[in-house]
Amino acid sequence: MDDLIDLSSGQVVEALPEAAIKALSDAVASDRVTAYAPMAGEARLRTAVAGHYARRTGADADPAHVTVTAGARHGLFCVATAVARDAEVLVPRPHWSHYPEMLRLAGACPVFVPGAPDAGLLVHPGLLEAARTPRTKAVIVNSPVNPTGSGYGPQELTALRDWARHRDVRLIIDDIYWAYGGDESGGVRPGRHEIVVGGASKVHALAGARIGWVWADPALTATLRGIVEHTTGPVSTLAQAAAAAVVEDDEAVPERSRRMSDQRAHAIRELTRVPLLRVLRPRGGIYLCLDASRLAAARPEWRDDRLLCADLESAAGVKVRAGSTFGLPGYLRLCVAVPPERLSEAARRMAKFVRATDRSG
Ligand code: PLP
Image (cartoon, rainbow, N blue to C red; front, side, top):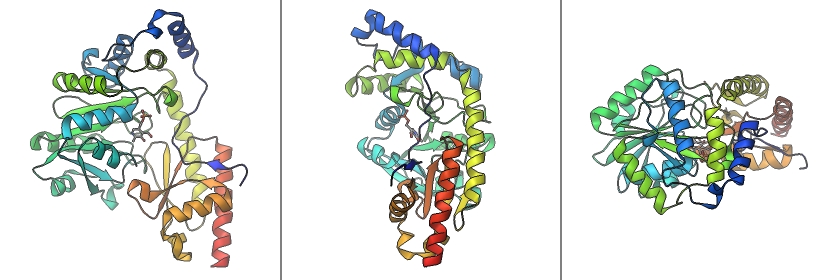
């Protein structure tokens, strides 16, 4: 169908801010762009990232403990390689679609831990403990969660932290969506049992630059820099210049976060009106999940949520992701970071699609 409404990916697309444009053109005009960046990352970016964590958490964040990676995805891969090769990593389910394969490629074994249905599908120490074995080295904690938008509050995070410390398991905090409604805790605290992976893609709207980072203890930092050296090598100087500018000048973040919150509320209102689909209420994030079980009851072949997505795309021109990609079969995931009028139009099309099914079924 022409005029597809694509809600399937998770991007926050905006015009590049002046500060980033200037940083890029300064970098282009300098000799820095013809040279390799330092292996750990440009000092300006690592200082900006450390400054961000110091402001946000009150911790004494040292740029020497920050390593720049080619996106948070690469940061997560480096961490998994460093701490969990030949070992198990607990992965709360539902989860970001890339964790399982990323962990396997890093030589680790993902062990899925289904989240509690009465707690927003989040995990708690009892669930982690039941899944732990002598081979468990880490657990990945993402908040707000991609795909559900559930989030760990201060008490829940403290409980996970205590559990990890007492079992000598590392918390790998995937902090990529921190500003979108999941950070009432005051955030993260790296140390031997906590590793923070962040990036510029979502909160700073700079996905194309492919900049991420890891904030970790000194020993792990040394290992991570070795992994960066032998995989991507130093990250692009141009991309780091743009990222440093947006992380230093983070005044845009609260405004972006407010806008996302409005878009999320709008999406919930609109999609709640679609018959036979139930909105899973998010706490934050840039996505929404819809329970499609009643719709699948009307058309049994749609118990395969991938088929439902394909039919929704071809018949209604709305592209969303199948929940099974995220360990949440029977659900649909969509991104709310789109103009509200597009979201309203998507909801109208989905309602029409569902009504047509209901009549024919
Ligand atoms: N972690 C989660 C939960 C994500 O959803 C994503 C991107 O969608 C990433 C990490 C990767 O971010 P980056 O673009 O920095 O690689």
